[in-house]
Image: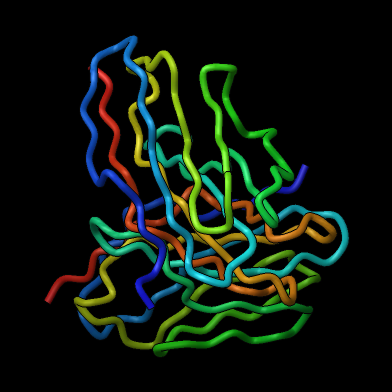
Length: 115
Length: 113
């Protein structure tokens, strides 16, 4: 199993540019989560999908952030326009629902730097 | 709301020392509790978990016991190794919120030879 795949691994962009982060969950998993990790705020859940439907987006910081999951094998997180305070590591995780204690499997993360 | 509080790091230990990382939580009902570990440059990996009061999760020599009376889930290991150097996250899954996890702020562990 390839695990959760994220791309790109590193992204450097200038303020005001559009940024798109991509995630491929583990095959057969039906929940997908986007997290943001910063020194100041730790690990925050941004949004999660179940069976491709957004269930909880209360962690999305503002309208500049949007996420989609057009099918079971692909999700995107878009920031438009980007700002320096968006610099962080963004993680995607997936999970196969069965019980409450089913494990979330994390990808390696995308390190975003907005100049 | 639901939350997790961990002891602040960094924690620096010598090899073979005893490790405790404190974790307490606030939640309504009966959450499930987890410890995740993050090695440098990698994503988080599940270390252990517990689903109900007095359950003990264990893996790779690490243990944690779900204590409802003290709302705690402290992580322990009897003899740490240099390879255990990482950031450790305590997390809870609130009841009736699907797979959502709420994480503590993380505790960095550094083990010296």
